Length: 192
Image: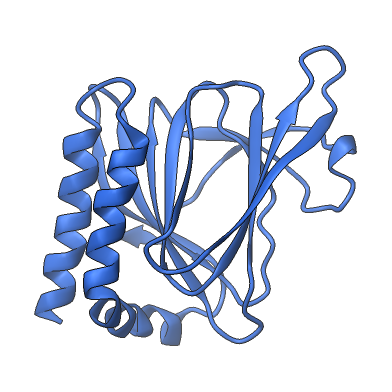
């Protein structure tokens, strides 16, 4: 358990250090965070097992928050087989890193004139793998847990004010997506 606490604190500290500027080098942040997860994956998975036993559904836990420049670091759970709704973080940057499990991560670009979405990329992420987005109001993404039996856990680092985001229904017809502002609820706070 001590090794997990150290790993989680290290992940938090890396995110806070890179997030000291308005638009950090997300590729370098992803590499550094990923190396910690690769090095400590068994310890992280063992500690996250207690969260998996208590909660079979998705959840979000705050790991760190800072006001200037605005930054939030969260741990999120994605239930077995769960497909998250399509998310649009507006003009913010973000990085999502898999801690445990495997995710499919799809990105889309919204046409500024008619609002239709066009699929851009699809990635498969395992422990230590990351995807990120820079400030671009035309981008949206969604994730899906590839396992039918195991909860996936991810580390999310978001820059900019992020109490709200726009989300659409988890449907196959993404071109018909209609955004609604949502406020994410937290299941609690994790101590580093």
